[in-house]
Amino acid sequence: MKRKGLLIAFEGIDGTGKTTQIEMLSEVLRRRGFSVVATREPTDGQYGRKIRELYKNRKSVTPEEELALFLDDRREHVAQVIAPALARGEVVLTDRYYFSTAAYQGAAGHDPLKIIAANELFAPVPDMVIMLEAPVSLGVHRVQKLRGETLNDFEQEETLAKVAGIFADLKGSCIRRIDGTGNAETVHGLVMKNVAELFEPEI
Ligand code: TYD
Image (cartoon, rainbow, N blue to C red; front, side):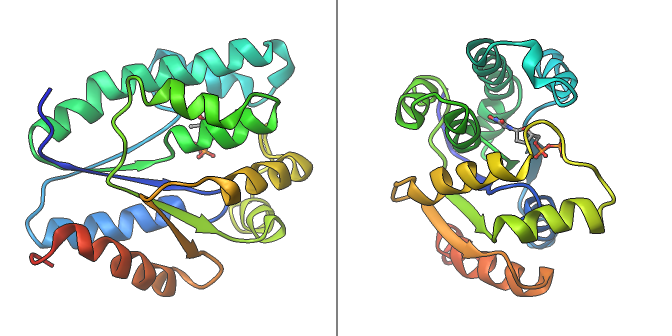
């Protein structure tokens, strides 16, 4: 499928503000006349729903089965949402993508670089990855105290420290590391500064 649109992935540990930043960027881009598809992984599709069931009991599957579920979910996401939107020339903002698989399933023992290679066989490489960075303790605090949520099986602090370490080591020219510790407006300013180059001279 011919690709005309733009794909921007938001990555980072839980509580770094990905969802808020996607909402803010979507609004700016839509106001400026772009057609925006804001989407997320895990998806709400058949595999995404299975993944959400795992939140309560991650041990019910093997690490291999877990990795396969995330890949199946992404294959469906690419085929049904991402590739068609890119072919229509739209801007796709995804809340998590295959860098999350490298980091989270990497923390569970898989080789992060092999995970990336397996994904790049079928998943379009993003034009930019906005990697939001914040200390694990702040991410956990935001999830627990501010959202009033409990940590699911993927989000235990020790695991998240490993996940953050892998995110920090990932290399690639499309990756932009952004300080996610400030308030939403401050982080939005940093996001805008980075994505502006993709839209030049339009925004
Ligand atoms: P999250 O962004 O918290 O989604 P939601 O708020 O909709 O539940 O993601 C859910 C969890 O899934 C998160 O802890 C990270 C994990 N995850 C992986 O382990 N691998 C992946 O490939 C993806 C996309 C997410």
